[in-house]
Length: 282
Image 1 (spheres, helix red, strand yellow):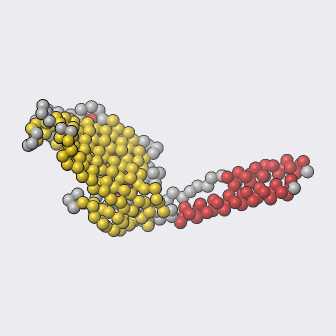
Image 2 (cartoon, helix red, strand yellow; image 1 turned 90 degrees about the vertical axis):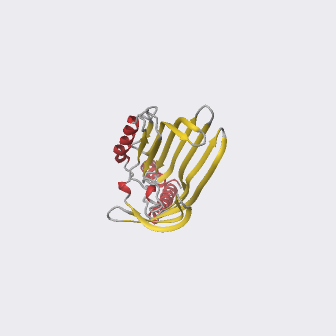
Image 3 (spheres, helix red, strand yellow; image 1 turned 90 degrees about the horizontal axis):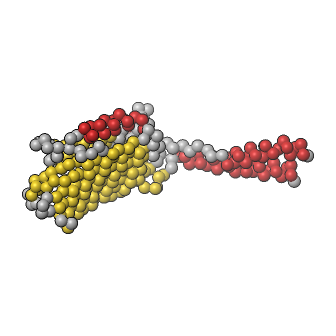
């Protein structure tokens, strides 16, 4: 009996390890429904610390990825609130497809400085991919190979740092290992306001976004704060755009099947261990 016990101990250990070993979960996007909350336009304008205008346009929607084509397009159904900048949020449902591997996170800063004093009279920031009412599901899927984002992202950083209206070198972050992106840019700005006269100040542009391992958006936020003043007045204008993925994601059949299989093997492993113990230890 001691010999049998010596032999069976490693077998029992193996059975227990079999029961507790983690099994891979299929993280396929196809078959999943993703829910999002959106704030397309969160706006506030104040003069001399008094809020003059304030508005928020927001809504929720879901995106069901029902197929991936041989040419690597995700086919999806968008269902919920869509947004047009001139009409606001509206109810929409549409089917579309997105070539997600072509989508990389990038940005482009453009400024106008007609008098060449290194202070911008106007500016524009474009972040890619961007929301569009015509293709509302596109911006939520990007290439999950994060090294592919380096070239476009670094070009945006280089161009912004070379812009003479940018007051300091920008701060930026991008990882080759995870889907995390951020930047902060401060632009010197001036404005001839019909109500408050000539104003000068800065525009701070802050961006952050994160994506899961499949390249599906988790969080996205772009905030622009214009702080200006002269001898008589102080103005502050804040514009924000945000998207946040909800916790509710319907698992596809492969994930459910894999989870059930893992649970079944877990039970089998425990039963094997119990039977072995009963047979040789009574």
